[in-house]
Image 1 (cartoon, rainbow, N blue to C red):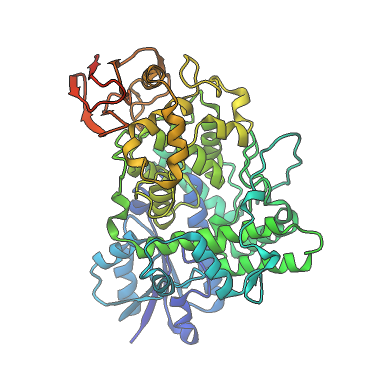
Image 2 (cartoon, rainbow, N blue to C red):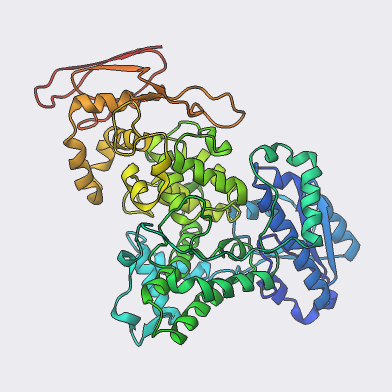
Length: 575
């Protein structure tokens, strides 16, 4: 009987459970790594993500060889062909794979129908096991991250004094939202030069026909990410020594030309197994305890909250929820993804800056993702599924388990509030407060209904109006909707009609190619109501019944319940 191990590209850790299960017989345990070109082509992945994963796989394969494992490394169009050859070569009778973190990949393995027993060993890449999270979640009416985070602090004894949190508080978020005003002295990031193995991967991708289209979206070079555990540990040490003590106050800030701010840049390494989250949390805690007289607690708590709190929580929710979670679309948003998400070519400076950065390095920090990229898509009515695919493809740390919960749930509120307690929708006011992007923008962040009004403003108020009936039952939206109700119907009409996106000629992206067409009004009003003005969905009477009509150059006439003086609502849609 011969056991073989298949190491996946996000399980590059010598302590992972499949390898550990055969550690005593490592010289008699064949190991295989596979680069599947077809799998890499399922989405137009960022080229630097492909380099990171494949180079890290090749380095880890070499590490396992040095430890005595017989290692096979294959590049193939599919997974099945090299697996069958390897099984025959080594007369393997049982294949062991650590349970894939991404649900679709587990399904893929099951569908391979290999002629031997396939055993999934428990996934030990996270602080909480799947079973532990399910035990915590079962029986709860709502899965509240703060409750989970506090339980994690107690269970793993992180920043605790007995049964109480260090500093007497669990949460220092209010101290971690400083806007980037004045001149900031920002720390340098730690980057690396490609070694020969990494350069081989770069050269292959550069020359491969399979990835020529991707090169029109993403930059392949310079590639400066680490690809080994040793380099990942260097990045962690560098962050703790140079950034952690000042991480908190400006963790939400965004500054033009600053790609990393005080952020740790550890997520790409955590998400492929080069680092374990518990070692990161414990290292941060130890550094604080050694420097508690000089370091502010809010910085350390804010960082630990991201790893022990949000990261673990999002993975747990992914495991806990049903398979159809990825198809949730509470707002029924169906508009195609704008082409400028792929190109960065937009006059909205915040989006241009962040999308350009993503194109360059495949990374943006959490507020850039949530409050700009996600925010715009939600208020503009973009399909959550198209957006999630883009996030999965674009980000160097993007995987199914990461993006389902962060995009479908947190970013788009497409689950109706299973993860977030309110939609993270905001106008340009938030972006202006937390960044310097608005200073050099073609649009006016103070305007919401003039020709040069910022699209974040008119989309924001239009979003609130067209989803009034859905949002009015959300407790945290009460005050926001009162602000909406103070806007006159005349101004709501103007807001709904300010811009008409032109059809994109891009091979990717939908009817936003930017180039907002000012005052070409597809919808005209009499009396009360509003419309999306997107040429797709008109949601009538937002303050009462929320009647919805799909239209494409047709005439709509509805009799609505009374609002104020009441009367007919007449919507004419112009081609």
